[in-house]
Image 1 (tube, rainbow, N blue to C red):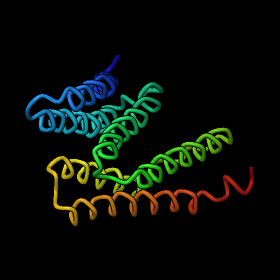
Image 2: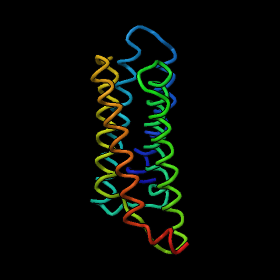
Image 3: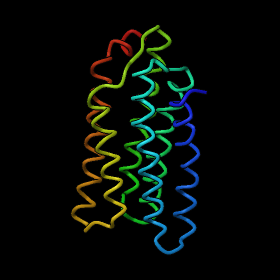
Length: 173
């Protein structure tokens, strides 16, 4: 297993540890969980750069890397829904977008076409990660709401863009 795949696997392993720390509830658990979240997020940046730079892209990485990202983000958002920092409808938008884009990619793959991550998807991922990190600091309601708004708007925009740019995949289905 190459280094990028090991980093992806590490990210997946860190997710239940992240959630366990949050539920364990010891003093400063939220900050320990935040450190784990940041570490896991950084493995995402690092594994992609290494895989592309050294041509270490594998089928495992193509499958597991985006899955690990979705799992990590969903875990954090589930926590914020549970503690009342994020409305469930915002998480539902994120989950529905992920299922929809994954479905679009599967249809495209069936037709021999690969839909690469677009710029708006990268902006969505980066802004979501930054906003989730900020939300660990128990921001005032207005700032917390702004983070939820940014996550929701970038998620909706990138989802619509994926479908708009690849509408031929659906219309020829």
